[in-house]
Image (cartoon, rainbow, N blue to C red; front, side, top):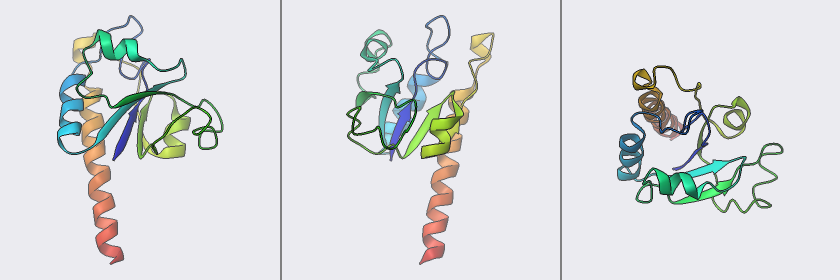
Length: 136
């Protein structure tokens, strides 16, 4: 599954800190065969990959469409379909499916949303598998 994470207020906080559990969750997703991407309305955020040493778990960075989400994918060079989106804005999640993540909690060390993201992805996959088995 192609999993797309937004950057600001999704992976990083208002003061440019990485959310707790991010490395672990991204590694787990990758080890399970998923491909993880970053996208942002502020452009390709390779500086986030660099700063937080995410090279081994992020397959690519893209510009995120802020409107006409599906129609703008080719224009923005998004070369793979977002199967699952994690974003602090509801609209991309509504369009592609995924998890609408709340802004990071304070104090930050108590924020466990990345663990919830992982659990939600696992539930999504289980539902999908169940639907495919029921269909035949």
